[in-house]
Image (tube, rainbow, N blue to C red; front, side, top):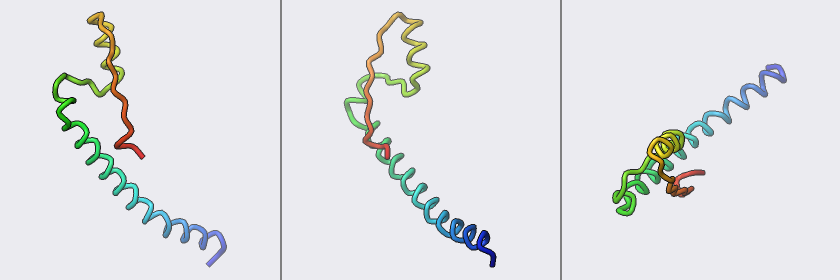
Length: 75
């Protein structure tokens, strides 16, 4: 096996667990996001989660944007 092939094999071997970790992390982040969105204070109003849509809607209606930023579901 050449040096380049050994490196490629090593990287491939390392990549598989990384993808699994990314899947686990994504699933945990989605679960945290869903739990956050289920909180009662978020159900008392209609929230737009797309910033571009929110800014367009605010401009069209002449309203301000009330934003709630959180990183509880981000890495």
